[in-house]
Length: 155
Image 1 (cartoon, helix red, strand yellow):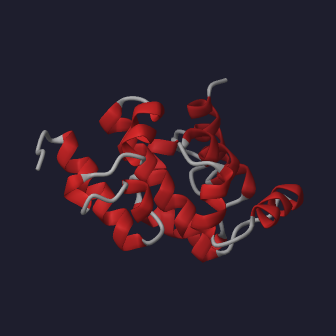
Image 2 (image 1 turned 90 degrees about the horizontal axis):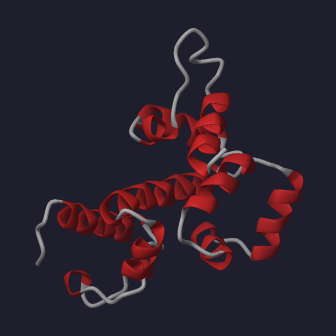
């Protein structure tokens, strides 16, 4: 089973009671449905979902610890305890999943997206896009730039 199938299965399991008589919900559908995202953020992203999201993103464990404003040691404890993340951390996890989804769409593969994230970008004030992902305003700038690239609008 590849990582996308595992993500689909995890999302489907997470929303099983809500979608019992309907077809299974996919990870892509989840990321495009703001109401479902809000419900997961409110209840907290389970570590099992985070672990899969972490595997499809170009971010290191240290990056994740910075994004979530916790130590890597705390991140390991979350894994050991298989707990849910707090709403603010859950929101950041989903934001990084969205950025990765758009980045993979734009560049076709995670490695190329990672290279782009680590390269200073003129349109982003010569900052590396990675440097802007620490807050939601920076994330919006990065998504805007990815969208422009996707549409062939290069500044």
